[in-house]
Image (cartoon, rainbow, N blue to C red; front, side, top):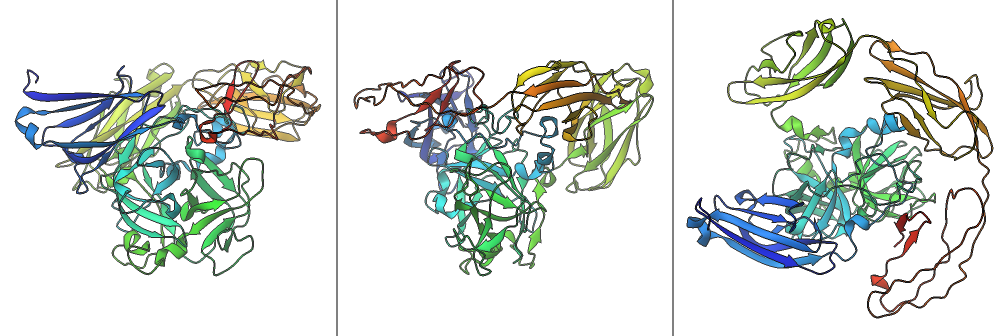
Length: 633
């Protein structure tokens, strides 16, 4: 008991060698004022608190994974309520393989990539990316799924995935969805980093769901989380298209390949309606066939991921296919048009849940989680101006406010002025905030807050104004050096950065830049790695220009470089076969020596043959001379 009148219980669980642990409580009823938290013995990782808000009719609580082989459970509640606590721990799930060690193919594209990394195409889809989560059932991660909007547009936590992922009425309470599990930086596709371990976090989640509908022929399952979506998820409820029109070309898939960090794939080829694994069109089919992926791919773990058409509306979810890094095979998505009517009952079709008022709507756009709450925000919360020009922000407020919303500013430097085009404003409206007298301050970034209040509610957000007074200087190029020889086919370029500037990069096969290989504007960092390989032994030219709100610099000096020659050869391990003991935890190493000069651009390991009593326990790794290790299986 504590001095504050609380009762506290702690239980420490140790499962030797576990990569992570998660728990399944088959009875969870937390009395008022109580809480349960989970943490590692060091206290570096903490989950919870789980509170009375997590009490559900099914009385279950399944926790997300916590790294390491030890976990501490701590329950705290007012001592007068201790007899009301009901807690039964029935499952401790031991992670043998390590979810963080499951690797996706290097051809995949991180969702964090954007214009600054040479992937401007991704920026258009920031909203729908936020609809997707990796999911686990009874411990572990195994499939992808996504939030989906309904015609009431009330942010009901409806979530779709694939039927073959195995979610049912009985096990839905053990479902855990992890939001924003993605790498913190852009790993260029094809690079060793892209095929290596990521740094995504599994600390934002929803746990527990109710099975709503499922239909095997089109392979869909719909559940509803038994709590609202996590407030920190910045979630998006995907729109959909249930018409009988094929999505055509330009489709997008957001997914967790091999349940790894979130990726995005693009196909610009004509899709068609087919049967499952139907390699020719069938207008009466129940799947959408994607002939091939032009950017990225899908893998095991991507099952259940949404297929978006060019209008960013879901038309299906991944059932399966042969697509992988290095091939041109097809994928097949259960068609949402088929799932709309499904098996003809509420438990086997979508329309009862996505159109609960039977409005007849067949096409619906997505909706941000923020739109279902009280918000005051700018259409663009960062602006840059060239003094003495004014900064202007478009301010919108939620339509959920009950009456007129009064706006106010705090934290703005005294030298600046701020005026609204209208104040107060009506719920759902947009006004212009003008920030003036910018010449009174030195160059820099200035952060301030805007708030909106009606008779009962208040909310706000933070805005950033960048003030510059002159165009930037000409960039100084760093690498590759002028006349460099033996450059990589996907070289990294570097230049000195300047405050409050962005950059225009050009790469050409001629010094007049009439034949551009890359033309990227709006870059925000001083490094760029090409995602597309250059031609061996060819000479290229590059330059960079700086820009800010006051204008652009002249182009930098022009540098040239020549790509190295590429030679293919095969090497055979001479120390095989090697015996792997069936006892203990043996480690066996086979070494292949490469004595050629230059650097290794790519390795393909073929004809790897392993026989062992316990094949499921094997881990196969490839280690470079520098010590970089990649897990193959």
